[in-house]
Length: 376
Image (cartoon, rainbow, N blue to C red; front, side, top):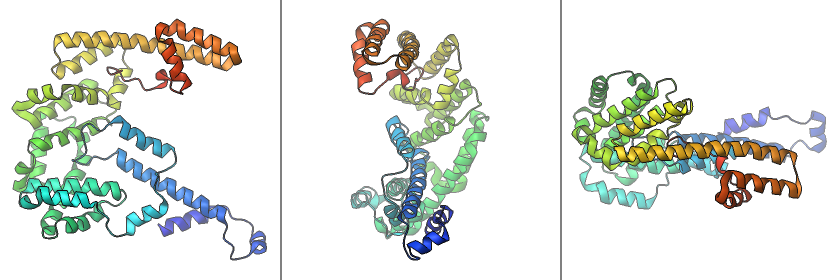
């Protein structure tokens, strides 16, 4: 970091030699220091936030909320994280500072069963989450310190599990793209083979019911980056993964989490991009196919499709309103503008015009937001 900081100072424009002599050879130039600090802060802030956005750890939540991602992106656009450069340096080089409550809970919850590979797996996942929040730039380097602090008598076996998990995650990140074109049986065989290769006989003990959701999380993250595959192939791949993980319990699982699964599959950016390119009738058929895949019954399908038509009409009117509104804003001023905007809102929104007016006065424009086909 010191080298990076020095390099930033070197590339900044300097004053002339004569000017520096006049101001004193040893005088610090504050503007150069402040600029360098700002650049370093932005650089680290972006690094930290991308690490948060693209977290693909097996322990990451399947249902990561849009709000979390939005806050991270907002922080990037704002020019960096809230922590100072000094604090980030401390996180890189200082002594481990792990939440005492986390350590206490881990000991109470897992301390008696650390001989179980599944428990070891869970411990490493939880430590990873705790470390990533405090040491986003070097959480893996801090793992051994954290293990020694939480379970000083089990460092070797837990670090062995940590290394295995790192290897498995690295393999998944490098392989998921090629898995898309393979059959369900081939994918199942490849996954089982790799798990056995890395975890040995412990693989069957680790991949039990409560870890299946983590596989779906990784698949959703992967599918979100697929650009060229047809929508039907993405859906088939995701459904095959669910069947692979849940077997005879697949229908029960889908029925229990139907709305959540639909929301997060349809909400994927790659899926939305596909839907956005379709004509309304084609989009309607695609949404029906997706919902049927998740066991939505006929009566519910009919209600969803009626709602889709209402939303389609609302967005069409809303976007037309925004265009006409912009014309008024660009060409008219003062009381006349307010009068024309009130009339425009009334013509488009009727009884809801007052609500739209209040929203716009507060700085919120509903039709500037992201349209999510099938969801809003």
